[in-house]
Image 1 (cartoon, helix red, strand yellow):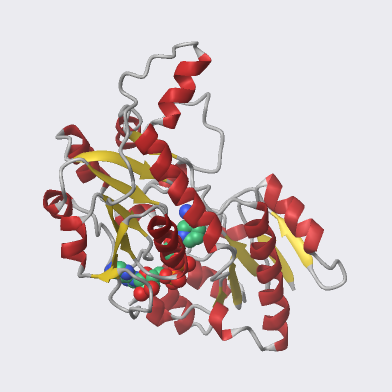
Image 2: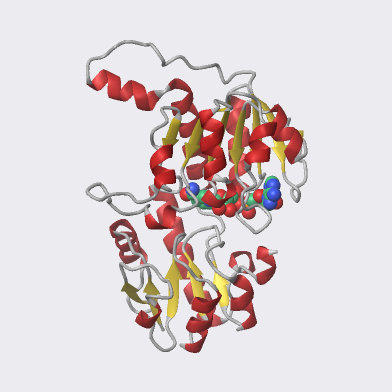
Amino acid sequence: MRLLIFGTQPYERTTFLKHQDPDQHQLVFLDARLSQHTLPMVGEGDAVCVFVNDDLNAEVVEGLHQLGVRLILLRCAGFNQVDLKTAEQFGMTVARVPEYSPFAVAEHTLALMLSLNRRIHRAWLRTREFNFNLGGLMGFDFHAKTVGIVGYGRIGQCVARMMHGLGCRVLISDPVAQPDDQPYEWVGFKELIRASDVITLHCPLTPTTHHLINEAAFAAMKKGVMLINTSRGGLVDTRAAIKALKTEKLGYLGLDVYEEEADLFFQDLSDRVIPDDVFARLMTFPNVLITAHQAFFTQEAMDRIVLTTLDNLVQFRKGTVDPRNLVHGEHHA
Ligand code: NAI
């Protein structure tokens, strides 16, 4: 069985080649992302491997099924890019890498928080120009601030530990996870957004969480709040965020993900005109810091992603994929 690896970046190819067993794996690296347009690249009985911005909507999944594809491997934790109900309907196996390095994403979340607060992105530009003026660079102590964590899964738990380590009051909102013995306060989402100085999102993108942070949510927040999203772009209504930035309700915005990132991220567009006016507007705010979906991007995480993906392939052939790695239709409910 060939494994078609869609949207392969050079660093992914290197890592796959490092870990592959040429006797077991027949890997085909493709630059294109998987979508309706690139479906014809798939051959009879192939398996496909995709990343966060491939588009496996119902039509694409049905097309894959018609081509005899039985296995979709996600080389990421999130699974919002696949129509899981259709995959399940056709009896296709969808396997992901549920945990590769929650530390990588949590550490990047912290990097965004601290950089925004202490304006490192602006200070760096100034000192390069030998401008040593401090005007506009004043930050705040994280110590004793209230940090709200939306989603207490693998990544949310790491972030909570870090924020507690900085001396913050930590609020958690998660409709499923149970309180543990950590010294955090469990609150509802409404209370969390009302009481937090810093809000950080670590829940998955599902139909229920789409635009979780919308105009009404911004209205309920403290003035000057910091919002960090390293989870999925669709959690935040970007137009509402821009409004909140303009009224200074939103004091800081740190994004590693963006709802329309599929046409932007993971490519060099530095010599192109960007047609996305919403994204372009975001870039004009001095208190917005955007990275291009790199929170996962550490050596340790890349190794784990590739090793688990290859293992999912091997186990699928044996009929024994680790159930923790399988994604089902009900994940999308
Ligand atoms: P996880 O599955 O371990 O935890 C997610 C938690 O969110 C669960 O405890 C769940 O109960 C909770 N949750 C679900 N709906 C919620 C809601 N409405 N409000 C509050 N909590 C809710 O997932 P993990 O590994 O912590 O990852 C979280 C998200 O981070 C992923 O879904 C993925 O989208 C994103 N991610 C981003 C990466 C990046 O590079 N920027 C890399 C890896 C993951």
